[in-house]
Length: 397
Ligand code: RFL
Ligand code: PHB
Figure (cartoon, rainbow, N blue to C red):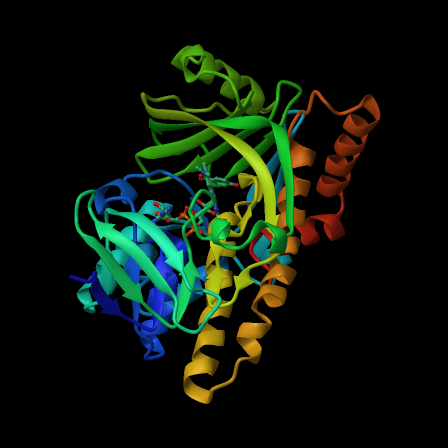
């Protein structure tokens, strides 16, 4: 007996921001898709990741009629603070960019909204699949093999196109022969220790702090829960970080000279993440298209990762629409090039914010002074601040 076969137009691997946004956009274009996701819905909806949405990402959510809860529960920030030597410098993004803002709305809440809406429309998202493997992406009839759960029989998803939206560790990028892939990478010698604490907001906007002890970031999640990060050794063991030590570092790095105090609360989640910049310069192989973290990674300092994933699938959906409605392949043929123009700008901005704001023991004294001069210039020049602001709120699509 042959494997059970399902047919669709676009087979999507991964139900992260890239995969879910893509299925929504395709549905509105009258293009069918099926999403295969290895994790359970519960796990995805409980994983804490990004928090900052660019203005156009918010506009896109609203334009698709999916933004109702985000508009009710999200936090709208017209700027953020750069804190240097205990002095606060407000970057008024709205004033510097003609009214653009960023919205703090947790990634897992966004994913909940996207998955619920897609399933309510009759969309197919298969959670908890295993053994995902790609075949035939070089010809016109690609096949994705998978199993439901760990012990379901092997099944085939036959499609016209495969969207590899499976994150940095997923199988899609590896399905492009190594000899055809150009990859660029930078690994940073520091990471972030992130916490969630049950406390009221300490400040009305995000604070990015540069301090001789290292970087710190004050962010938020809700009126009751705050998100904070401290620069640390990426190989450090979280067991070395008692709550007291975390608060002590946060107080020192975020402290100001005007008497402002960080509000503490019980810490209920903590973890360490490493930081890298990565670009796969080959985002298409035959009928396989990579999107989001599957193709690129930015360090989180610029808050770009999720937004960049959504931008990729906007371009991909336009290419697929031109293919199905007009038989044109030019947009699909130009996919990698179109995406990479935006990706490299986001890579540059994320790298710039990261190198400028962190303390890097591997930097020569010359480089350390240059980064400090960069920062001092940024907070003293309207032109430099405008450049930061327009990148932070998101470059036009
Ligand atoms: P995701 O979110 O990793 O989703 C990929 C999905 O694919 C599934 N998958 C598979 N499915 C089937 N078969 C397989 N073999 C599979 N292998 C993997 C995975 O289970 C997963 O569900 O990728 P996507 O969609 O490209 O989205 C990228 C974003 O999630 C990522 O860029 C952001 O989270 C990055 N990021 C931030 N981005 C922002 O725009 N603003 C922020 O403020 C921000 N803060 C952050 C961040 C990332 C962080 N971490 C933990 C890396 C803060 C942190 C701490
Ligand atoms: C977050 O709230 O998780 C967050 C905010 C801003 C960043 C990165 C992460 O630059």
